[in-house]
Image (cartoon, rainbow, N blue to C red; front, side, top):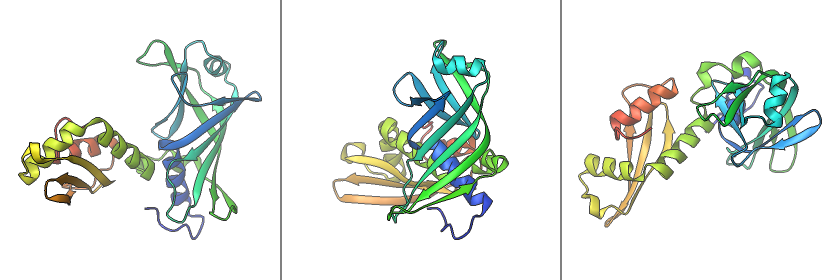
Length: 233
């Protein structure tokens, strides 16, 4: 959970803004007065070390806009909602960078070079507050393992690595695999993760602490493989 935002601390603002970029619930972009919605296979949004990166079809309007270095306005609604119902969104104004090739030759990557980053917090009663986010802090490696990133990682592991998680629980707890009904991760942090599982005796949980706090996505992945299962990624 984020600490309470009692003041406009620049580092907190940057962490929250990066979290929205890493875990968007929805996003849209305006280029030359035309709105483009993200979703499906034609236009995606990625956080590449703090750089908002558009993944688009080669030859698309977005790729052409990158070739001519057009200005863009990106709005992201965060997928992370506070317990009190507060939602956050980020507005990023900047210039599109020249397109770069992706591993899929049918796609291109177009980065946005931010000039203005705004964090907008909307309370449950509808009131809003806006904060300017320093661009240098937004791209800082210190925010690589932000709350949104950790949430997306947890979702990926639970949705795509069910077999590996079941095997990890079986090995760690001595529970025979046929008795396992389900297994999942929860509360992933740079320091560890909570493992939850259900077997014939009911629901259980165990906290797995890493040897040290991970500081990068690669370190986090290595810790998960070391302490749970080599097949996790």
